[in-house]
Each structure stands twice: as structure tokens, then as C-alpha cells.
Amino acid sequence: MLRCLSRHWLVALLPVIFTLLFLNSVSYASNDDQENGQEDVQESTTLTLDTEVVVPHALWLPAESMGEDEAPTMAITPAPPLEPPPLKNISLMLDWYLSPQHAALIIARERGLYAAQGLEVDIQSPADPSIAIKLLTAGDVDLALTRQPLLHLHAHEGAPITRIATLIETPLTAVIVMGAEPLEVEKNLAGLHYGYTTREGLNLSIPRLVPRSVQQTDDYSAPENLHFDPARALREGQADAVADGFFHFLPPQLATEGITTHLVRFDALDIPRYDGLVVLANSDSLVRRADTWSRFVLAVEEASHWIIENPTAAWELLIAAHPVLDNDINTAAWDDILRRMALSPAALDSKRYNALETYLLQRGQIDATFPLSRLAVDPHTL
Image (cartoon, rainbow, N blue to C red; front, side):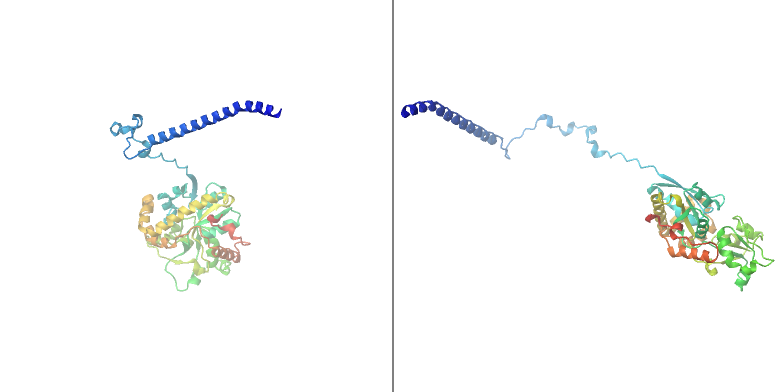
């Protein structure tokens, strides 16, 4: 019985086995054909140095067929320039009429140094020197020039002003006295009739010139406000001396009229040394506009260095921009002004400002001293 069943299963499996063997042989034959075909293709497409290459006509354009207008434009046409951002306008009020002491401000403008910092600076001269700080306090101008003592006095009266730069590092004013220098200087100075043009003379120098004992005598003449015209006052005998005259300009001007004068420097009166010309900003917007003031000071610093290294060219540029400055008095003052220019306008001499505060307190001009940050800053550190 078992043998019979085995024969039947064997007969049934034989067709299946033959079918599988046939399919396997066909698959091997197909793979062999593909491999042989690939080898033939590789042999037919292998390039050698002797192989002849044919470039399709669509990919080949003879040089002589290219016109000038078909040259690649990117190689010969520069990119259109980027339009520069608009300049930021700021206004600056001078302390008085334009003079060589303002050279750094003018040269910075003429040499495009403000524009390089993204600024356009409108430099204005006041009709009355006393209004510069008032306009700055009111926000009518962005910057104003003054002398360091006036900064202290106005700040203690509540004016929101702060020094951000120094243009001239030493005083430009002195006591200018009629006549030749006498032998007994101290005694002679005490008995003079003084005039002044700013509070610097009234509050700083005159109290040192005239002792309180003299001021209490019956024949004492109170100081007189000369309204920014000291030359006329001395010429007409309105005063014997000017307590705060510009020594570069007033004595030479009077000398051309045959009037002799002599100087008493502030250091001879034991007045602390101070900055002769500073740039003020409004304290209320100081931090908010710190970047603008920093860029302004950078332009002024670059101008100052160029002036020192090129004094003759700087003078020529200055008088070309403002021919009114071209006179013998200004020309004679130029070399001395150069020696007083600040080469690091932002740099702050804290000892100098604190010393003047202490002096004003001791002289009864202020009730208490201010911290340095209320009076002056380095705008690069804000």
C-alpha cells in the first residue's frame, strides 16, 4: 500500500520539478545576456586619445558669429551703486562769531568727515552769545559751544547741559588791562573799573581781582556788562579792564588803533586750569542720542589730527571756506591756537572738572558740588 502511494506522489511532483529547473535556466541566460551587452556598450563607449569627438551644432557657436552686443554683461557692467542712507541733520550753535578756534568744526565739514559718519552739521553763529545755552536747553539746537566755567554755573542753575567734547584745552580768555603792565600789579588791579562780557568774568575773575574790602568802599565802581563789545568799551574809557577778553584777538585789535594793553592770565589769579572751549549736548537726550554724539566726536577728532599734521593746508582750507577769517590778526593767532587744540576731544579730565567744582564751592559761587557725570561725559562710553 505504501509503495503504491509513493509512486503516485512521485508522478505528481515530477512536473513541478521540471518547471522550476526550466525557469531557473531561463533566468541565468537572461543575466548572461545583460552582462554581455553591458560589456559591449562599455567597450564601444570607452574614449581614447584617438577617439573622434563630435560636438552637436547646437552647443557650438563660432567666435566670429558673436556680436559685441552678445558679450557677457556681468563681466563688463559694474553693479549699480547702493544709494547711501540719508544724512542725519544736527544743528550746532557757536559761542560767538566764527574764529580760528572753531577750526576743527569747519575742517570736519569741508573734508566730508561728518558725512562719512552719516551726519550733516549745520553750524550757526548766535546773534547774542548768551543765547547759545538757552537754545540748547530749550531743544532749539542740538549742540552748543561754551567755556567750562559757564557750563558749571549754568548746570547749577538747573540747565540740562553736559559736556561731550573739548575743542580747546586751555583758557582762551584773560584779564585785559589798559596801558603797560605796572610794577605793583596786585595793588593796581584792585583799584580798576572792570567790565565783563560773560559770567566767567563776573563770577570767576573779578572776585579774585577786587578784594571784598575794596568792594565795600564808597568809591568802588561795580563791574559793568559790556554787552560783548569790549573793544569799544576800552576805546571809549567805559572800563579800565575787561575781565574775560579773548587775548588772541582783543589786544591786537586795539594795538592797530594805537591802544596799549597787557594781560593777566587766570593762573596768576590761582583760578584752576579749565577747558577753553567745549561742546555741550542736552542732558535729557544724552543717552538716547549717544551714538550720534559719538560719531560727531569721531569726525571732529579726525579733523583735529589732520589740522595738526597739515597746519598750512588747514589754514588755506579754513579761509577758503570762510574768507572773512583771512586777516592779519587771525593769521598771527593760528600757531598758538594749534598748540591748544584737543587731539582727543572725547577724553575727559575728571580731575580738572572736580577741581573747578571745588573752587566754585569755596568761592561761594555754588552751594554743593555735582558728580562728574552731571557735568561731563565721554560719549564713546555711554
